[in-house]
Amino acid sequence: MTPPHPRGASSHRQAWLFRAIRIAFVCLFLAWFASFYRSGFGFTYVLLFTQRSADLRVHAMHDIPVYVHPGGGYDGQYYAQLAVDPLLRDPSIDTALDSPPFRARRILFSWTAWLLGLGRPFWVVQAYCVQNVLFWAAFAIWLRRRLATNTVEDLLVWVACLFTPGMLDSTRMALIDGPSALVLAMGVEAIERGRPWLGSIVLGIAGLARETNLLAGVSILPRRLALRTLLIAMGAGLLVVLPTLLWLDYLRSIYRSLVTQSLDQLTMPFVAYQEAWHRLFRVARRTGFISVRALPWFAFVGVTAQALYVVALHRWRSAWWRVGVAFAGLMLIMKGEIWLGAYLRVLLPLTLAFNLSLPRDRSFWPLFVVGNLGLATSVQLIASAF
Amino acid sequence: MGCSRASQPAACCVDLLTELSRAEVRPINRPPGAVQVVVASHGGDARRSLSVRVPSRIIFHVRIPQGATLASALAVEAGADSPSTLGVAFRVGISDGRTYEQLLDRTVLAGDSPAWQAVELDLKRYAGWQWSLFYRPSSLAWEIVLNAYPTAPTSPDSLRALWATPQINGAGR
Image (cartoon, rainbow over all chains, first blue to last red):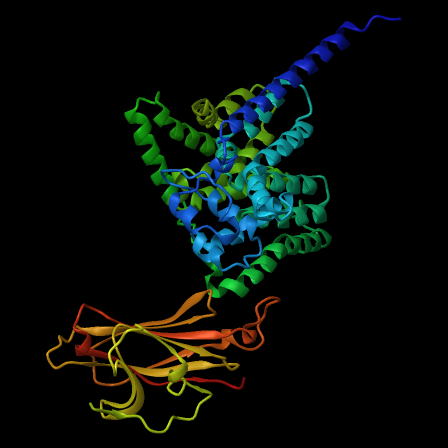
């Protein structure tokens, strides 16, 4: 029997080390999410129900105990209610939701929760609460396959994508952005691998999660101009928008002209961005840049660096580059309200495009650090839960 | 300007004046004569009209014919001592019992020129074939909602809103 090769043993040990680190991060995430469990209410804590919303909730949820927050609520409470009535047949949903047509346009993860809960309201609500974790786990596996080597750089990119504050916010408030980023990523990857039809179908499904995901349709644009590639791109583009158009048509049969409610989320380029910059910078400067209150400014700088880097790359042939540029463009025209916090979730595809495009040379380190300054917010989010 | 009890209804697909007896009227508790069909003269032009105290809401349950429009003319009747800036906000909406869409929001002041203000509202989206896989408006029972609100607090007897010959015209049912 020959002794194992020393270098083989070393790389084996290294593989185990990286695996152990990844498992530790997954455990950290699960432990963090477990801190949202409330006896008697399960994980409904993450829905952020207010008393008013709890009183007005859709009929099918009346007997389901939900944790009520004394302060302000957030959007998860509405998507969870859509999940128990995913075709909006019960008119009580119209008074239960803040903006029924707007919420209903983002129906995908209400449907997945309904399927996971087998249509039983109690289970559907529980499924909705935890599905962010399930999608996060799937995302971790997908990223692991994409970042296959056992290097510190790949490990850091893996951690940065999974623990970016947008992803954590999506999980702790039962929102749609984290799962939606996974579906988008799978669609873009299929296109990258030369499967435009499959990718378009997946991106079409992603469009049912968030209308902004339709921007990822730029990934099907042809790499070079030719009649055949243009025709494929046009057909694939139709597949991307078709599910959204069909669903909008269904919603129109209920809400008619109100179906486009709250679509006015855009403004003139740089207007809201610049306001956000000044607002966050003022707060950070007042605290000497060393307070928790300065973290949003660092996250903002990080996202800005991501956009600048992605645009500067100029890699038309890369599907992820095109998606990154599209979301960098969106960043410049988003309305002021989105800059109050939601931008880290809305721009998750940009964060992904940035991290997946990072070079593996000496420039990796400064780029990684500056682009992922938002991870400081993530550390604070996790620490505050324990 | 003068008023008298109404006589013959005008010919139309759906004459809302003749539908009034089947309509829901708000407020529920209202004095006699709060809502009545009259012939009102405005600027020398006499028309059969729905004369209502404000605020009021009248909900007509109707089947809307294809290619329909809702036509009426608006005016206000104010007491002699009412300021010219007092008026009525006329609002027309349509509902299927679930979604309410506002079709008209117009204010007519007591001091405006004494002429009927004609309105014609497109109802084509609420009947007939539509570019949709799911939206079948002809299968829905629609509610046409006529709202009238005072533009400022006022005595209920000093202000009335007039809806002249409100009717839904169309190519057919």
